Image 1 (cartoon, rainbow, N blue to C red):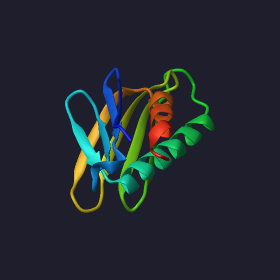
Image 2 (cartoon, rainbow, N blue to C red; image 1 turned 180 degrees about the vertical axis):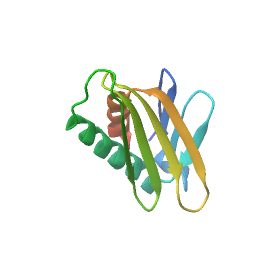
Image 3 (tube, one colour; image 1 turned 135 degrees about the horizontal axis):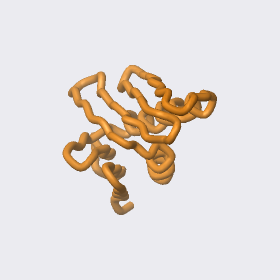
Image 4 (cartoon, rainbow, N blue to C red; image 1 turned 90 degrees about the horizontal axis):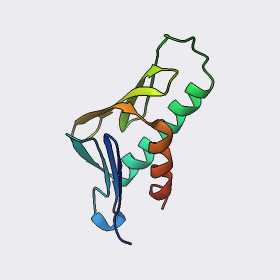
Length: 120
């Protein structure tokens, strides 16, 4: 399988299953982290949980929300307003450490791309 690399304004995601220990890539314009397959699947799952939580939340104009989810492998925080302008923060918990964030994250776009290759 050839590597799948997708990018958009302020984000990059990659998946290369034959890459050994770190087939996943998440990043922005000025940072990137390689993820294990399990970490990448966890990232996808947790991002879906954040999206579901946001879908159940009603915010008035001008209000902001902060949601966090975590697993043994990583921690995610989403902060933003109802106009879908969010900051998404990622911290790796195990083995090596890493941290990154996306400002103005387009969460539905990230989920759609992750869904194309994480479950492969």
